[in-house]
Image (cartoon, one colour):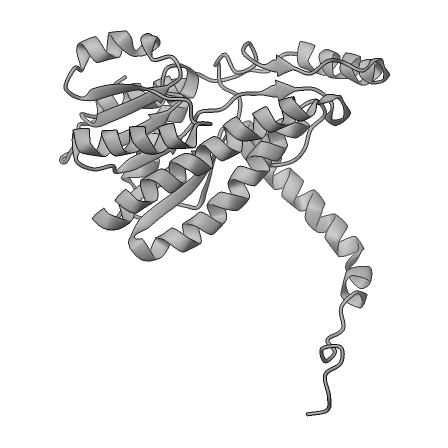
Length: 288
């Protein structure tokens, strides 16, 4: 991937770096002359990059659901490269199934990886970013955080949780010079669906599943991950990055459409909403 070499090489920490968008982000950072800690459960797919960039890529085996391991690997990364400039929470997986179909173990596994994994990394890097007076945390969310969709409800739940936490994190960390951006990608040619886990199906939902299959059979034109990586490089180069960044025309249009529909519903129920609030003194409070 062609990229301009940065004047001062940055240090990246990328989770889920061995495949998909994480791999594209890692390649783009290395092409820009930066240094990267590529973290993944299986780092063998990074062997070719490590051979080409032995001094600038540190492949770190990591399960982000293991909080102690996250802290250990982050500390090791800082000792190795001296600092962290860009942290990309990209590790994640897709668990598919109707909400009723998920077992407790499956639901917890989805949240453990997509939400708690990003939380543990965010907590582990913050002391280092605060101490150095800056840094940029990029939380890779999803189109699934724009709304809940049939068969991806638990995935959406994990991304909604990630975004709520990240908005608070952005407000808390800003005073230390630390920036936070939530990135919402649309469709990219990765193996997210190929590696998805499916809950045991309930026959009651078969008609809905068939309807969804017909919609998906029409096909979607996804994009190459390198385009997301190019957008990310522009994001981290900005002096004033946004809290949220949509990636792709489809997700951009969908975000505006969903927002408008929500605003229309809120406006239609405005009278009921406003009638539900009337400020009164605290119960039991005496006259002032």
